[in-house]
Image (cartoon, rainbow, N blue to C red; front, side, top):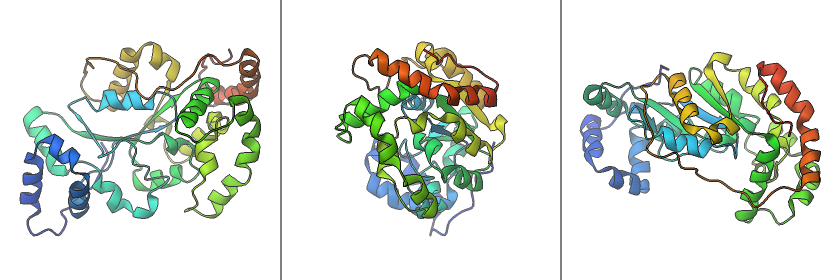
Length: 305
């Protein structure tokens, strides 16, 4: 388990305040985000940092996996699924990040009442693609475990496209969007590297192909974390056999076995089948990147179709 810091903050009576808050019904605590935010900031020093982060990739089953995991009695979660700390909210500071998580008192109560060691989780799948996130995470939570869901990059790109179209961020056809991607993304990475506060709309919304070059992203993350801190999972296997993969994740996290009542799919987007010619073109586009990834990991995923 990681050392997550549990020193007390300077409250008039932090123990009493924590106890009263924890006794409130969960729906009250969850429904009072403004009150929670203020309270959590005051008690941030008594709160935990994540033991595990789902860092990516976007449109690869991360929401479903997260929804399954937070049902486990030994897993505590952040106030929202995607804190986006290591990409969008880093300027808020570690105290803000810590304030989003459960308290040390809550972890103690879980240990006393259920005999379980609480682990904390967050899931922000944009971390995988962000150029500054690996270094920031390695400096802040060097002992955390990292889960990576890797989907066939062709299917991931198509799902990403429909997700953006549904949200009103894409008006082009899929073919036009991937043709114009180099133009849209030109110079954006350089701007991000030059200014850590720069937020790239184009890289976030229109990076259909760029996000599928997994090998470079994983290499950046593995510069700061040893390989045994990673669980890298093929999304296609997860989609076809969620219970098997879920148990594998629980083993990786070293928590007791647990059965999810229903393996529902969350946050899925798509619209029909991709044009066969476009698909063939993208398979060839990603082939050299995939081969580099397979050599780097020493594993092969069935993505060449």
